[in-house]
Length: 143
Image (cartoon, rainbow, N blue to C red; front, side):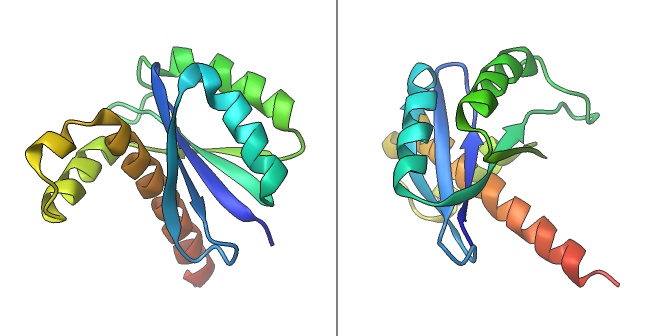
């Protein structure tokens, strides 16, 4: 069984997270410039077995795709072609940045460190992946 990976896609940079080989827990991997995302993913796939990549899909408060989808869709479609047959799955990412900031505060991170948007992106990718894992677990346990 391969790992699962997640991407918190942004116009400037993307947060990356991955599970352990048993898919029990997600951890932050890196934050990469969006222009270098494809190279980073291909390099990671060359060294690790990954079954699927979960991409945070931005939605507004009403569940509609947000404005940033217009940047995300073409970039992810190109990535899909480059990494086939690895599956790419979109997953709702509403509130992940807010949750990431809350986690940083709760974890005692200093205010100056919390301003580092790269850290927020990596934590957001981890939250997306953990939420995906939880949703899969819940759907398997549902009667």
